[in-house]
Each structure stands twice: as structure tokens, then as C-alpha cells.
Amino acid sequence: MNAKKFANPTLLRDAGMFITGPVGVGKTHFACAVLFEWLASGHRGIFRPWSALYSALRDCYVTRTSERALLEEYVDAEFLVLDDLGAASFSDFEVRMTLHILDSRLVQLRPTVVTSHWTLEQIAEKMDARIASRLAGFQRIEMSGADRRLEGRDEN
Image 1 (cartoon, one colour):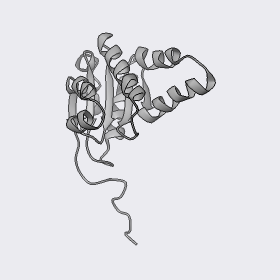
Image 2 (cartoon, one colour):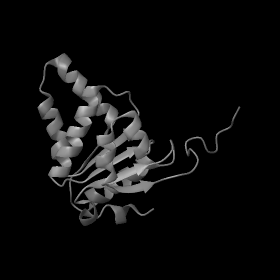
Image 3 (cartoon, rainbow, N blue to C red):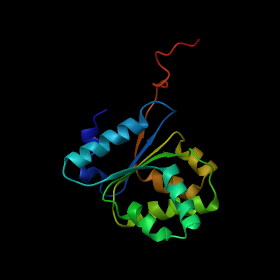
Image 4 (cartoon, rainbow, N blue to C red):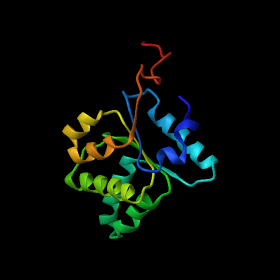
């Protein structure tokens, strides 16, 4: 797949990209390649795992800092890659924060790339149908294949 094609600001402007597929097929690698192409074209962007977002939000309560400032980093980023949706257990709070970020970015027409080993149907079932609905509007890339991390390893 050609990351340069998918990093086109016009193509991503209205929503974003949802990259799905089994564990180890290169979803994160491809999302990073798209981000690097975006950066190379003179734009700004950030990469964050969903787990880091949820952890940082929990830390706001421990440190008594504002979650608003933290969320602004995610909402206001010119280009955002959020990696590995579905890798954590989900509280109602995490579901609400996920919806807040996706909705806010959609309203502001900020491109977002989301990776997940889950399909949209699994996201609707295991997380929230509203999250799956938002992601359904993204350009969808389905990756397949064997776990590349396990290829070439001895089974001893």
C-alpha cells in the first residue's frame, strides 16, 4: 500500500481513516507511514496509542489537573493517529472521552486515523454503537495476513 496516496490532505480532510485487521499485520506501521507523509508535506501531526490517552486521563484525577487541557491536545491536533482501539477495557468514562474526541475532530474537519484489531461490528458490540457509527464514515482500510512479528520465529 502506498502511504503517500492516503496522506493526501484533500482525501483526509472531512473525516479520516479507519485501519482494521488482525494483530500483527502492519496497521500501526501503515498509520505511521501515513503520518510521516503528512509531516513531510509540511503539516503537523501526532501519534498516540488509545491506552496512553486513557492513562493520561486517569492521571488527571490523581494529579488534580484539568482533563480539558489534555483533551485539547488530541482535539486540536492538525492530524491525529490514535493507535490500537480495543486494546483496553472500557469504562463509561473512556467511551465518553472516545466519543468526545471523535465528535470534536469531525466537527472541526480535522483528519484522524484510528487503528484497531476489531471490526466496526465488534466495536459496536464491545464498546459503543456510536463509536462504530463515527468510524463508519472514515475511509476504511482492511488489512489481512499472518502476524508479521511471529513470521520467521522458531516454534521451539
